[in-house]
Image 1 (tube, rainbow, N blue to C red):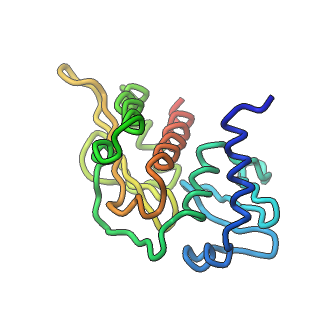
Image 2 (tube, rainbow, N blue to C red):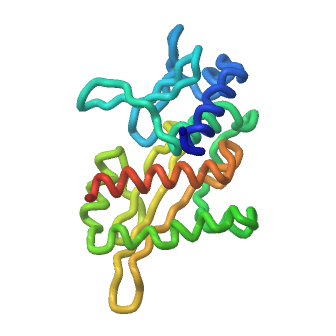
Length: 205
């Protein structure tokens, strides 16, 4: 029996087909052909089948296309299908934690997970920096490791890591463009950052 995540992803895959693909292409300048739409997500190439809605990413080491996971597929579907008309970056950074009081309710608990994320990289600031650079990160300001990364070519995020010391535990902070919720739902932002954390953990393991 398929788990709930796979079921939800497949439902969104089907729902994708109901949205005008020409609008997606125009809004985000997507490369496309008769069979697929193409988009970059955290320095990986993705394609979406224009007839089935299936999302895949290119494994550059093997040259094979691999079925997208829940977090990356759901982020891509939400941005392509649900972004607001005229969405554009504000070019103003805000902390992701600042969205928690706005959203409230059960959604605010998403930040609990990220509040402990720094522990995964304790003593690994150099390794984290190298991992960020391997996925296209650009050095950012402050912290023991801080990088700006392209979630999409048109939408960056940033992270700042402080390693532990005698007084404080390791901490990892995330920042996004102030207009991020014009591009995706708050839940989807949690999916995107969960995906990024998983990638970085893999790179620093």
